Amino acid sequence: MLEKLQRTFTSLLPVEEGRGGECNGCGDCCKLPIRCTFLNTDSQGNNTCGIYRFRPPNCRKFPRSPAQLETVKENCGFNFNTSETFSKNAKIIPIQIKNK
Ligand code: SF4
Image (tube, rainbow, N blue to C red):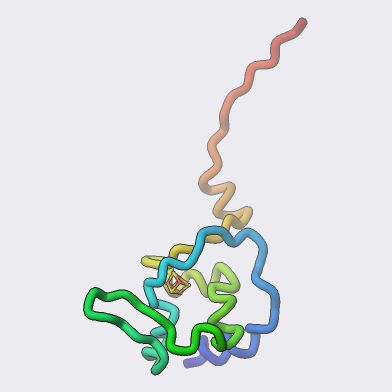
């Protein structure tokens, strides 16, 4: 519940740099910490938001930071290319410089 309050109070801040990917509709962020009453799931498991056009900023911007993404990282379609993750995933590619 503390995370939900924190998300609400920080929802007017901009989305942190480095976010990529897109929402795949998994609905995991709509269940933090309990299932939202506006989340509708059909018989095939597809999720829709009952107030999508009017959803609040904490839903619009989710995940706003790498810390928020951490809570749904199993299924969320977003990612953050932070310098930390970049350096972890970076490969050193040798280059050859030819002298003329
Ligand atoms: S957890 Fe990520 S992919 Fe899933 S509904 Fe929320 S924003 Fe979309």
